[in-house]
Image 1 (cartoon, helix red, strand yellow):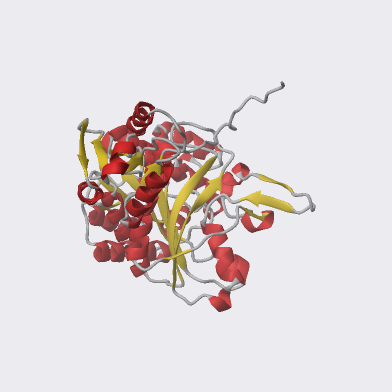
Image 2: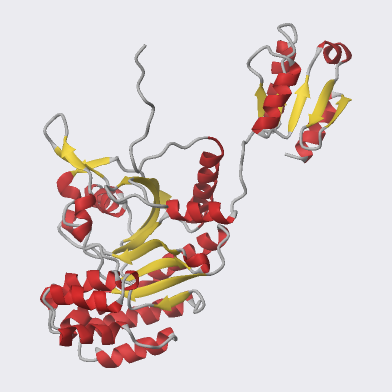
Length: 432
């Protein structure tokens, strides 16, 4: 018999058992907080027309999976959740009331180099506010994100905040608006390489070292206090209206969020995607040097590329795969081996109806129960329950049926007692 080697594609994974339960638990925590703030769910297809996605991601567009389908259409797997959301708003504009708060928890695909916490198929937990030009929206997203990371068990983290208007102003200050994207990408990689390497990169892209020094003077302000750093930057960019506007927006966000311990100005945050137009920020876990676990930003022009007129929008996503890796490494999320409370044994064919009846009563009382689906020895059934991590087992044999009792075995304490079913139900319910 010829067999096919079972395997998964590089960068793709299967999930089952405890691992999947933990993922779902984290998704549930995040989704509950999204709903708590009044966001409504959205789901979009895995595939989009190729032209929907192109021109939105800058250099990262080379990572988009794209191909011709059987009908000859040029299609692509979605790269993120923001562009499809913008397409939805433009396509169904007459059905969506603005402002629109939406969240989306779905997989995306990127032909990226794989490493720990980085995959080619991964899930994003996305939240956006579309239709509001005011910093009130950006501030809410930041406050909501702080609550999410806190609820997930993280303590030492920051929101690193910048503004693409400031980056535009830096290009104008250098007199090199034609090199805006080269400057943005250099700043976006600022923390990932030595300063000399960044200088040489910008010089290789056509900036003089004098122009590069001007960029550095705007990014490296040598000031730990965020508001004082913005004061210093205001002096440098005082003649550039767009820069002053961006600084003003950041000041408003700082005031609205009112959490200087968590929210800091960081001139090295650029967010390389081409569609950002205003405030941009990243979630940075400090403890353990984890770094960025999510990114957000304002994109006031993206919907307009589909609709023909601009609709302001802001939002972004958590890198849930990286968060899950960190939580696993640190034991923040307790291992959930199963969601089943009780294994109900089946002694033989004649006792099976009673076992099924007991399991149905347990489920009616909100207790998840597992009827063993095979006629095997009780010892084998109990061994299975222990390996699966079930806390209780109910043994229903001929004697129990005759005396209208059950034998309840506490698999954690390795104790068992024979009681009537109502008493067993009370014990299990207390520990459920």
